[in-house]
Image 1: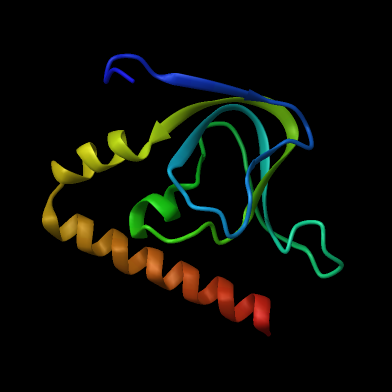
Image 2 (image 1 turned 135 degrees about the horizontal axis):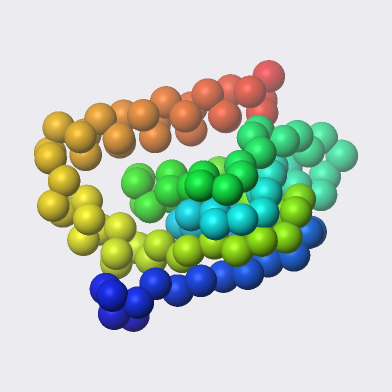
Length: 121
């Protein structure tokens, strides 16, 4: 994909943009619609961590720390998103201040740890 051309993804209510446990190679910037971030999607003990709407970003955690998806992203309302590839993300991060890169990694670690504690507790 060229740096000048952004890929766009459309989705309908109920569509899963990604699933908990999957490899994370994409993030999404929501142009419209609404997406729920769900732990244990489809299971009896499923719970919604967050709801993200227009202008929000989802899937960035896996790009930040190269870990698997910590939750499922399921559309509650149809919409569209700009796709951020790992390649594009890494190019931007390479040019970012080293302090900010380190800070983002620390924040990602905190979020993952809190999510794990909440799902276990």
